Amino acid sequence: MKREGPLNKAQVTQMLTTVMAIFTKEPNMLVIREPVCIVGDIHGQYEDLLMMMTKVGEPDTETQKYCFLGDYVDRGTQGVEVTMLLFAIKICLPEALFLLRGNHESRSMTEMFTFRQEVLDSFD
Image 1 (cartoon, rainbow, N blue to C red):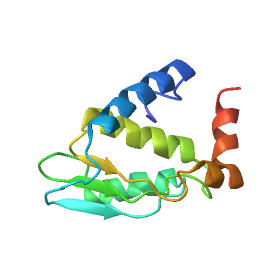
Image 2 (image 1 turned 90 degrees about the horizontal axis):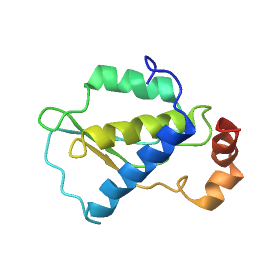
Image 3 (image 1 turned 135 degrees about the vertical axis):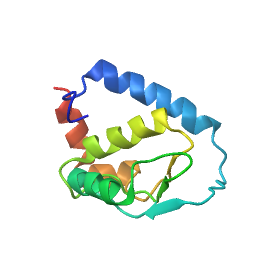
Image 4 (image 1 turned 180 degrees about the vertical axis):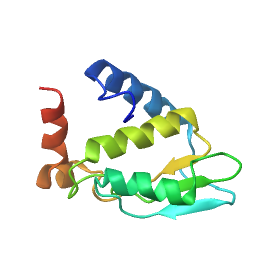
């Protein structure tokens, strides 16, 4: 994403449509076989996410799966970038990355913190 530059609204819309189709096919109860890296709150820290994936390894269905426990947005300044990178990986490698919903992925939390406004500002 750094190499290609910012996403435009049409690209984001297409990615959201694609990733939603993937999510709706996944079961409510996930069974993830090792090796898997369990990741806690990212909270919009894009550079930290990149660093973690550099140190642990890129997502791969055989050698390095990831399970994110939620809280991808708020507090940090790059919640949109974090979310879109995770969605891009999910689209490309649906069996290598699993995304659970945290309490920050709710309407009340995104309105209380900054993510909702950050998304709206991104496409003005």
